Length: 491
Image (cartoon, rainbow, N blue to C red; front, side, top):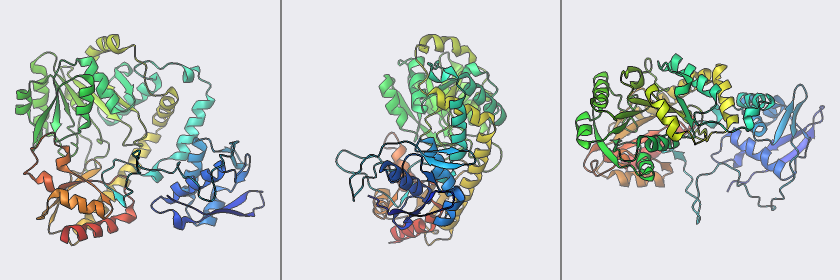
């Protein structure tokens, strides 16, 4: 449990009370997270009262010796969650929230960001979580997003309180079309876009639509959540092995599947980028028989660090057999449960006739806000910023590994794409034992073998290949992480 000391003193000429925070007790929270949580706690405890003026961003930043952007992002999040509000040219003020009467002196900080808990005890807090697909908290444009949300709320559009049709809000579907046309070489109409609450929801809807009697082939190794989704839909899931070019077409034919899920741009977790010849083979497989379809997962394609993004299968499909799926969860935040699929035109009438009784599960408010975010060019700018940031983060991590004591026993595999790389270790110890020791040292990490659907990986390099997800990593922790790895791998 994290405790903090928060006291108010001084009073500036404008009448706001300065806030002093003991950042030494923030542990592994970022400065922005701790500042946000501290101010929020004081509001809930009644120490900051309704309509009380807060210090300006610059004044508070100078007093706390942090950057203005840190204070700005913390204030923006407090505004977006309704704890404070701003008045142009006057400043920031506390919203009218009744005190919550938390017990003293040991206060509950349940609102702090935490990992999932069991009923019995909290999950372990790691020094570095290289297993999670989290994103950088401080890089999210909170102030900009808060402004757009206010604009949407102030629009008075009655559709904000209306049922959203299955396809999603027209504004967002048009914005997605524009983005796909400009950046993914996909030229489609808004009617082909279907918005959903996360890719698992999209997959579930697709499998129900295509029919549970059809076998569903998935990449092995691959995203094992698909097996759970298939089982819930009553669909048989068939793992198909990969080779150096991606999913094996020979094994795919043997599986007798009618539907296949592939990620040709950057496969997770192997990192394989499917070459052009294999893409043509997959498309040929689909057109051989009626009723065959390819679900193309374009996850992570925005983060290609070398050259232009590869053309999606959807753009090369001349037979209307590819269904394109993507998400905003990685480019914006995992909590952004907005994904979408692009259907071939020949499936539209049947899809909406069969599934049209559903409503879109994503709130209209979020859809309108995201549509503006894209249309006004903010999404493109955010992607460019994050691409540069992640490239730099990846380069620093790989450089630290290559300069470390483990460089002679480590092999790094990465394809200049996506937000993870593979770290293969030569050791007499098993991969499970190495992982156990890494966990004990505070590093949470997954093995490539975790993503196999069967025992194929038992005697393969997958047993000692670690998947390094670096997107949520704090840069200052790279060197300490590598030092911990040296101790574990060379012990």
